[in-house]
Length: 397
Image 1 (cartoon, helix red, strand yellow):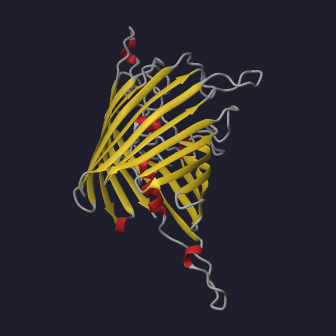
Image 2 (image 1 turned 60 degrees about the vertical axis):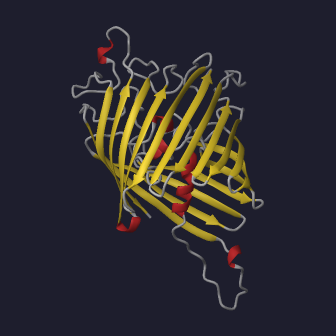
Image 3 (image 1 turned 120 degrees about the vertical axis):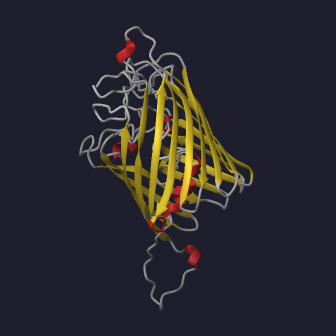
């Protein structure tokens, strides 16, 4: 799913194998450019993380239950996602069916009911299912379910440099269902606009439609910049069936710069606002804002070993998004993540040793000493920070 610029890498990863029907030597030959091509790719990821707080529940999630996205368990080997991606393309069109399996599949299908096998089971989810029509060399139309354009990171573990996902990712959109059009003015400038049902939901919860947009520009060689936006009424309808007043809006900046062949920098900044109801989760009243900034860097030590870091600030003190403390109040967090990337098995195996520290604001209410963000070994929430160290193991094909 697209989260910022890194979807380009995922599409490239998909083009590994192809299968074509044999053509009889007596049959009329078609131009190669008109032949459809099948592709099949995917990955399996698993991880082990030790939590220095030694939480009694062996959970990395914290009091609000969403301090981490997919790497939720501590002190045990865990399966992440299993993904299969099937594609078919011609010179004028292509289609993608992107399926996710495993205990995190329901999390990737955020906003919908838990799969038929139940929570923490080996579920199946449609991550993406869309087609593109290349109307001209510059204009492309897309329809179906597609990953969001908002943000820097994506769901797919092989594409992100860090294994654990940012708070900006975890509190932002995952996917949309609708239509969009992309027009490339040149190799360095493009514009996308679209109409979608809403955010992270297979079914539209009201009659309103959301508007999405993205402006891409490459000011210099190696420098890419994406300005992303969305506005949508996410409120559930009133009892009489008419739409309630509720608004979700976000403005997002994603930029990357390949400084040298070895040194890379990235930045993601987002600012959002909400008012009223959000898909039936409760009316927050007047507009409340939230936002954050994440800085990324990585350095290629060799063609098989690299080291990267991410520093992030995320502020949800207004309580607009789901990130809250043990008292149910909005909160803020500073996070630093250091990740190595090691490739083996001719590039199919990717190992990611990772160290991460999250430091949350402490509640100021009297008697809040046991209502901090993270759990200790006695099962009480006496910790305002959390440090984890572990390894992600990813095989891509």
